[in-house]
Length: 274
Image (tube, rainbow, N blue to C red):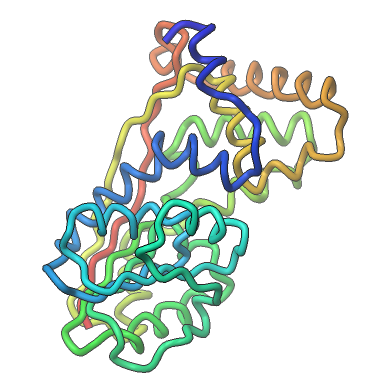
């Protein structure tokens, strides 16, 4: 992709949820969604609950594959749900908490949670709620990012943020990642009441047109947009450029070939039955 084409592609107009759906979903989260659904292997007509659904990529992909019956997405963030509703009217979109799911016991055949568990203030309770709403023999599929050091682009970004915006600035990005290992994630699920539990450590590679594009997306299309929202446009651009340059300096040259950014990302993907 040429520099001009990259600039044309990464247009930063719109709200953060819209930009998240436009750029991060096709670039990263749709790939993890496909992996999760492959592992869970939905059967035709199964009822599915997607917890922390965001803009709805998991539910939409499940619907596109044609296996699922009733599809429900739930999220705390009303703005993300508003974007989800514009993308699909066939899925039930609900505002609510993973810690107090508004469903009866034994309501769903499958519960999914892509890249959400790490954000829950009470992870054991969230997992117990998943068990509660699953039917006997029901299945769950969850994914969470592993230690941030296992995703070099994200690790370089948080170090650059700390330098230019202060130590607290990287807290949001760091919170996307767990510091524990796969065994601990599996232990949480077993303690919550899941029966057969498997946790795979999965690596994928992603490519952005450049580190600058990656940084701009992170600081515009995610909750980190709040770090710069009070700055004037000229200062925002100056900081984005400086942070991108600093992050670039922290990466191996092999990740920056041909001016692009290519990096590995690691996640734990858990599948379990009730």
